[in-house]
Length: 377
Ligand code: ADP
Ligand code: MG
Image 1 (tube, rainbow, N blue to C red):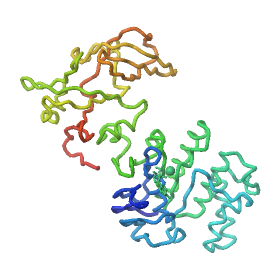
Image 2: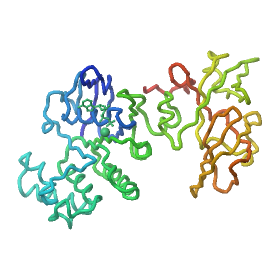
Image 3: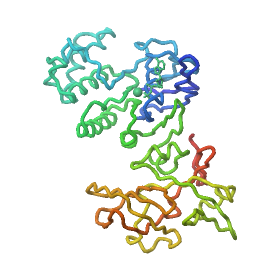
Image 4: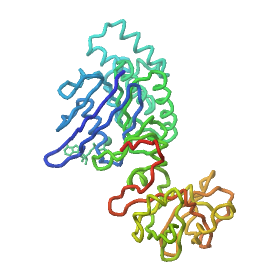
């Protein structure tokens, strides 16, 4: 086990930077997820760490060693790919044993480690089969097993669940978490799926366009996104955004739109004071929008009338697509027993303490940090 550190790491193809100035420190034994949309540089970052891709600038450390110049074999990491990359002509046993043979581990030691790992993963009966005689889920386990038997300092996983069907994906996700709890090996896991990231990571590094946006716990990413990108990326359905003008009168802040206005919570008054008379982007999560009939206690001046466009019934909840008089659209997550019909009007509450604010020019969050909470990005 070891800590991993990216220190001002760059990757350029010609003049095009696909990873820009990445600085990230993963603690010994931590499970860190790199998440971001397709093309954001996740695989490139992981491959530079594995030694499969040259570094254009900066330094990568594993444990106390700078690994920039080390071959993949000497970095003591094991990687699991989306494609599994098993050798088709080799048995499961030989696939799992291959890396150990390369490292000149003794024959008996190899047999013991492969059998132990296979039985731990529930593939002990499959050791004589060829990859083509396995289901997708079984192949994926062999790929994991091949990494585990190596007993590396660090596991690297690049979208290892993407080729599995939805049910198997959720099941294997839980198994990988259990595996990490048991082995405690430092793990860096790449995915484009924010749900996977939120459920698996001790901490999550959000990348966009080759740049680290925020590196934080799932809870802090959800509650305190540092910018519009993170706010829109984490959470499903995504946070709703609309623009409103900030107005202060007698020390009281309000957000003023064409057809409705909303109060500013006391906790946000300080941070927004500098935006008097300016337009800011306001965000609210679908789960924070409340049907007024459900809660009479919420502030009456935070109510807006909206039109119901579409209702999606999911079973435990419904996603309700709403349109304001100004033509802004919003999605709300509403409990399933509330009757809402497309084409009708409804009053919803946007609770002031659930609103997020962003600077329109920079996209950065506008907020007052609670005392004692350190900025991490
Ligand atoms: P992700 O894994 O987040 O989807 P990648 O790290 O695979 O993203 O790719 C990041 C960017 O780098 C993409 O825009 C991709 O087109 C570009 N890229 C990857 N490999 C090369 C290459 N060999 N030459 C030029 N551009 C590349
Ligand atoms: Mg990728």
